[in-house]
Length: 173
Picture 1: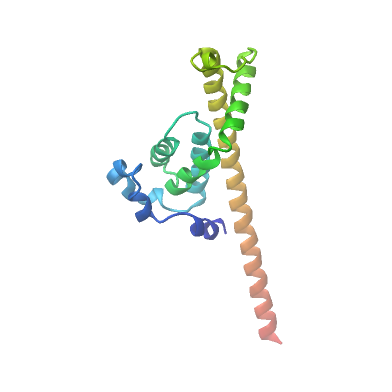
Picture 2 (picture 1 turned 180 degrees about the vertical axis):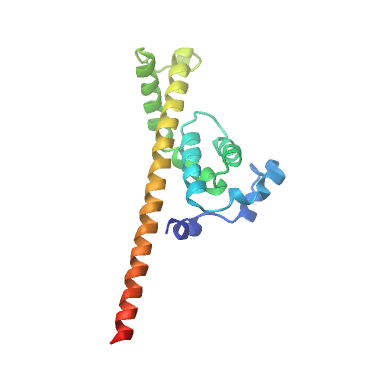
């Protein structure tokens, strides 16, 4: 089941409560719902984490932590998924978001320069493309996690039924 896989990789609540960037949340981190590994909380965490990964801003982990508390999503998974955009993947991801934004706005991309960094011609399509990609890929990850969780539970139940039938057949011989 996905729960068993996730428990191996997700840090313990006590470890995360001590993290300097999350310590300011204080008592909000004591809510049990943000630590449970259920199909709903994990699926919501996938949405929150992937959405925040596409935001072109610093401190994405803090934003993901706040959103996960508000949405009752699994906090550790939400924060971990933000690292989909890391220093290696950020340039291609944000360039893709920029291109999506220019396509949505119907404008042509500007050539990169230092002056372009301060221009709204760069930031407006980047932000619109990032939010759009965040919503689309967040929804996609939510749906895929729901489907994966259901498939995994069905597979485990089928295996359990098969084992029981084999045990009963062995006992009846």
